Length: 474
Ligand code: F6P
Image (cartoon, rainbow, N blue to C red; front, side, top):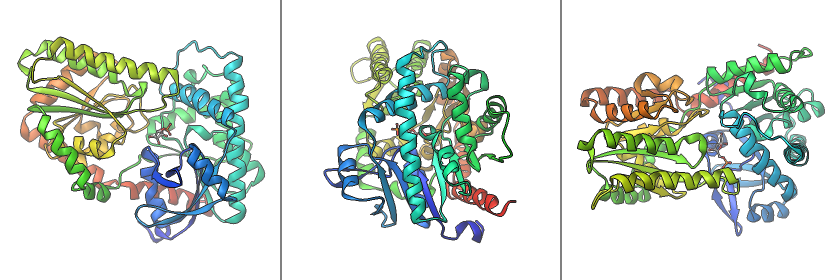
């Protein structure tokens, strides 16, 4: 890392989810990969984080403060937190109608290609997505008044409109926007009304930098920008691809965490001879149902595996107020039960479904897998594929969807699957289970070395270099 990128600087992170959430005045760590990824920024720079007040506790804490206030992370680093309080009906439409499911499904190629964009959806855009983005832009401007030199780092699909509002008010601000989910091809965006897709792309192009985890999403965005915003009015936006990494040292430290060891002992007590593990939020993009179907097919084709192989699905509940998510959670339960009813017998449950928001449990799974199954329909990157190899102790094999962003980096050491092809996935699971020991080791070591060599510091330093390049006009 150069001195330039390690120098302490003032940054305004703007993201829907805060690093913490409050329950009765006590701060609890916020969920999701973004929070983990950005804790490195907080540790080394003067960060103000602008986020939505999501819980009652968040709103109570926000009401006690006028603007941002100082907060401390578990590791003792301080940062400022600005919680934006939205009208609850507007926030509900923003989060539960527009951002998830519509934008999320669209960007993971999961949106019904004949979506009904009736008055309800358009009202959710006008009275939910637009005002929440306006509130974010207003709060960001206020924080910029306090820290006029700060660069603004927007994150994700919740905030496509805010950068343009910010640019109109502050033409000289330096801003970037990192998108952590896939960017679909231009034709697929046609599922949105023209006005909305133009607003999204114009909003993003108001930034100096737009970032993605892969070349694939970046190229799609460039094609979309040409199609939807052909007139750029002289503005230059750098569109970059920087795959995110993980904090390798932090993960290594967690290996012997007492809670992880406790979960691991429990897992070892019930694990079969060979263990296939998946770790996911319960989300249709994660393709959990097809994964169980593939495992069922494997068991029907290979009776010799009965009693010896098991699949553990370590799943976290997610976005449960959205009907599609509730339906998907039920479908996941049904698919697991089907495999168990068909093949299970005394002393052997083929699929173990473990639904809880329990990070130590996931880490125990990382240590114990023989096969890590990552088969998303589409995924911006998928951090599980990286994190798990830092902790795995069994030279486990990665079975990886070709549509996970991480495939661009890890594909050569994984067994690649088409996420729609259930037979192909059953075949890949079998191949993973019988791969010779030296080949397993070679692949696992290569993944581990790659993840260590390209850790979170590289990603952060790439963002900061991009900001410097904008400032110096390089
Ligand atoms: O980039 C996708 C993302 O925002 C991740 O940061 C996170 O894991 C996930 O979605 C969480 O979503 P939500 O905030 O809706 O729980």
